[in-house]
Length: 308
Image (cartoon, rainbow, N blue to C red; front, side):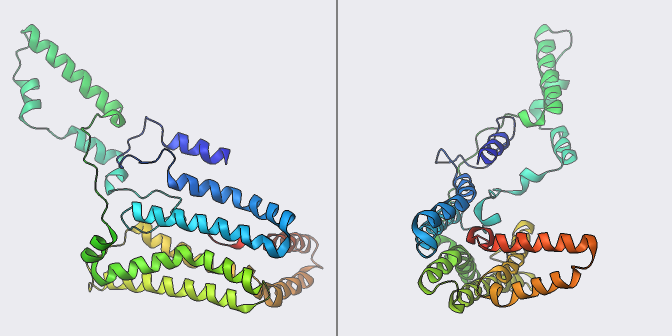
């Protein structure tokens, strides 16, 4: 948690250019979400020690409910954009933040109009006032070239985030599918924990229900993305970072192999059979044994395999 706060302080230092709108809260929601994720394993361990294996799911469910509320707030505050890294990564307002240094220099060197040319060309060097203005102009230009981050720009207007009704009216049916898919992604961990508390870790129903919610939400987003590529829908555009986020979410499906009851009835048996197979090999057998011990230990904690 200390490392997370330290990184946030460094990333939001005054030397960097921040084009996003001013935060209405003192602590950003993305930082609160990251800190809660750093703390959730401790919450699970303490809950298990105090309330037991069965009743620990109550506190875990409260934690997941808080995370879901924070993500919904981030989703609404961002103007209904896809949550990157589950809401921990802030979404850029525009693409101007990613300009290359060459592009930044080219824009700075571009003539700014008659006002600038009047200072450089229209002033008489023999005039004291003209020489002073020329000197100030040269000093400012050198400062801009050396420290482009320090350009003082006029305060931009705060972009008003659209309401849900406005977003759906602008984006149409693809926008409705997109919001549905994101909401399913946000509430999926909470649904899984509540079902685990009710049916237990040995039941297949929580496992299947969680996988079904994941598949439905991802299929909705994938269909929306394919409609964009086919040109049928131009109201909703996916950026490269959002496409990478979809791939990341699909990779999280591998965690279902670590969740009960699939792990106990299938994955663990496969791991143990692999360990017996490579055990005669001197180095490989030792590495495989330790790796399987780590996987079995990780599987005992929900927060390590939650993917949330």
